[in-house]
Image 1: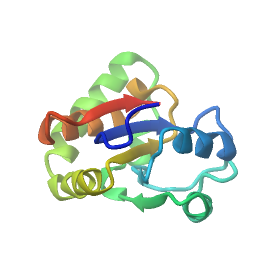
Image 2: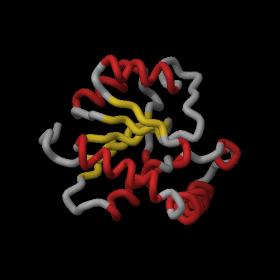
Image 3: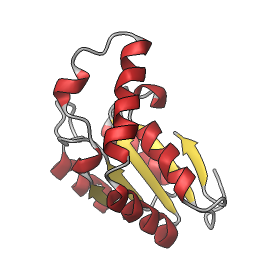
Image 4: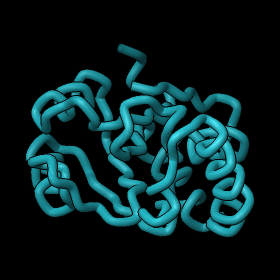
Length: 152
């Protein structure tokens, strides 16, 4: 647990968690806003599709934002098998998506500034296998030095 006045950008994947466990981790870390960075916020896993997730988070006092522009099309993710595949995808993502989506990144930074505790979310448990690690890295580069980054 960290000081609640600190500006913190968390990242969290829901792989391997049920919705109750996921929300509990957010509550334990006093997260105020969850930013869903999936292109299509649909999941076969109960509780993790957009509407249900928003409802569950709202019931615990956590805001939900969906920014589909920061997601990656499923067709680009289908053939990922090796670390080299992921590296190539993430290089493309950093150069082609993040460089063009400065407004979306500023929107997240504004929420961090106002709410202090924001979490980027996607599926993968391992942030190194998820584009949210690239988003958080870019936000850390843009935002103030006082921003902490924590992968939950």
